[in-house]
Image (cartoon, rainbow over all chains, first blue to last red; front, side, top):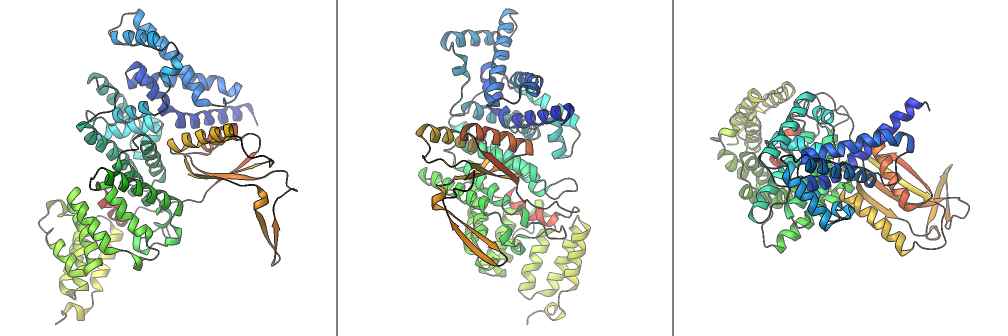
Length: 434
Length: 130
């Protein structure tokens, strides 16, 4: 191997270590310096030292501890400098004095065995003073260990946009003097919801690829799963955290079954269940069981994520589509419609009701959505309604709904499919069942 | 991406010590908390195992222990890693704790690369979860 190759390999190895270790590093430093921006700078300094030394010395046995030791020294230097220069960060000096007084062993001061620092970092990155976009970028960067370029590539936006977003986010946090802490009491629930939303947004961005030519960007799903698993280890008592992890694990278990041999999408009920990932399903079901047990112990109803996971679990447990427990899914959608009402949930509840109790039950719910503004241009509403009408033998109406759906569909391939279905409505059915 | 790591080492006559078990326990805990360890198991002595080989239609079963083998299977892990380098970094950490031996690390089959954009159906399916 040439020296250049060796160097490149070493760099890759260091980047990999960074991705695994950086969140803990930044979190520990942020508690010390009370500023996530400065903490990241210090951690990056340690990375630079590693990039200088490791290609020669080799990657140390415990690279995380090595980086922490270097960053720690930098942090102390930075704090001392701040004290000496009597900068406006007077509290940093106080902090350093306090640290030196009470914890002469800084190893102890920076140790974080229960992950409190990491949890503080999670809540800081998802703080409500930040826009949702900023929360996502900061979370992927500081907790996911992704580079700005990687985040930009994942969201198909220019690198400069993400870089700017992150810089602004850090500034906003500093200006708002957001404390580096885990919210307590009544605030916790709302703040936790923000954290879960950010993680699920990342997952869905990967799962449904809202932009660009890819349908699925599995790397983003994996990033979200990793963040969710980390959070589940930090906030073990929170049912919704396990609910979200369960939902993501079970959805991810179907990733490889969602694509047909020709690269076409395969819907849930048409998927080859043999290709579902049983390891992820098992992990998902275990996480769901934890969510249910924790909610039960608190005498709370399941939250929206656990409910969606429970719905996904119904599909995961059915070995064939015919074995699907539709009445249970319909009941879970009832609960979801109450916990997190939305027109799209209503539409899905209608489908579940139709599967469980017949098309008339579904049609009644869908008809109630006719005046829903949020669904006015949503092609799936007439498409679903057409399905029910067809099963009820109301062919003429079904055909009209399919044509309406085709007119609303944003995608040429789907429009063609809907028009073909409209044309295929049998004339006998179109004449009505009477 | 996911990687299967199979650990092979010289089989010892003695079970792992308390300290070894604890060190491995801490590593497993750390890796799980970092979201990178999806599953892992350790093997009991090869005396309890067997090998089955099919050769030209003939099946032969060999009971353990596998004394003729220099190194035997000790356990496996399934890792969630963003890159080969990341899987390597994790495997190095594992070997630090597990001791001498070899890990064979293989990337696992995943969803195929997806074709042209036509994901309206898929996104609609995921919509209720948003």
